[in-house]
Length: 434
Image (cartoon, rainbow, N blue to C red; front, side):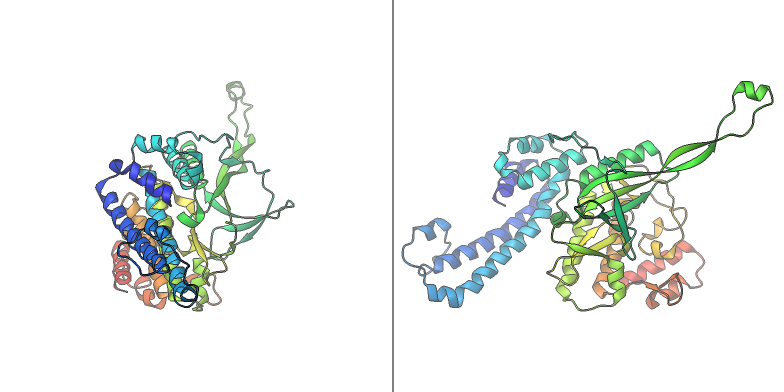
């Protein structure tokens, strides 16, 4: 934490005014908490002094009053330590927003940092390099793409999610999460491959517990063999002997992102599955933690100059951590992602349970507006609403594979309104009013 604050101070003049105002507020909170902790420790050595400093505490002589510590102070000191840890968990995400600051002096300052200071600083440097497309300075050069032969996986679907849990078949038996991205048939394969590589490289630098994004170990290109007609030679056509010949061609079909499961976490479940379970055996503050971490996830996707385009309870995984009932949330489902300034194809669908998480102008077969970051925020908002009321807006119909809307949405989704855009805005107004 000390080195992060010192680095922040060293690049302060390169930061915009809005970010400086935010960090000023965050650091003032730290100042208050530190002063309270110092005064508490100071009081153990006699009467507490106003505006105590750690140097003043150390100059004092005398034994710590052990009984007083045991009876009155220990809980307060533990609480102060917990508050400082909570502050750091708030500070870290905002500190890493320097990922997107376009100023070379930040990179120069990062290079100058001593090796002993390089835990969060090296993460910041690696992420800035990845986001800005600079070559990695790692000594070992590794490709973002894995050979299908590199991983021999036994896969298990995660209910109500596009992702799978995969267990390696070697002696390690290590588990990973595999998330599939189907190739858009209208997309340029070379551009898509480049974007996938950049996303994988960025996600490979993420610290899961800070960013709410799993660490990417690499991407597998999944190809299928298709039969395509071969063009006959001019001589064969002239001689009338041309006939249809089919050739087998390997064609790229999808990309599979391979994510490591963070140490200490296990048993991934989708947010949709938890909402459908109707299990309320958790404290309200756990929902707030899930909501905050999910918002962090989206913030760092955007800070890395990507839009997600597919945020829903199906693309949020919660992993058991042994500390809370709900567990730790992570955003996956990068099936439709693209660079924030990348090409948009205006291709959609009329699936109501997917449109529910899309801004009204982005719904339907031909969306009427280019996708932008604010549309991800709308999708996040619908998810946060479900977390808040702890109820799924998409239900499983008994005896039918088709989902059905929650009762409060059914009249609008199945109603008489014929204009799809009007219906979409009516649903938006209902969600806002909840």
